[in-house]
Image (cartoon, rainbow, N blue to C red):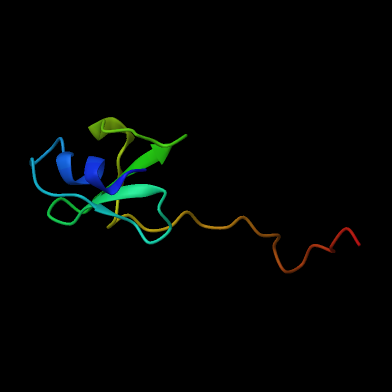
Length: 71
């Protein structure tokens, strides 16, 4: 994604500046603590698609300790 394009885009919620994430898969609004995904090189600038940076990461499913593994 072109850096010039990112400079033109603003957060759809607060109209503030966006910054590309370290993994380059989303645009971050630090003011609203939201990450807008970039899919196939196109930023999805919908509030309903944004991910909160304050939300806890999804828990990994694991087997209870008393169940045998399927080795």
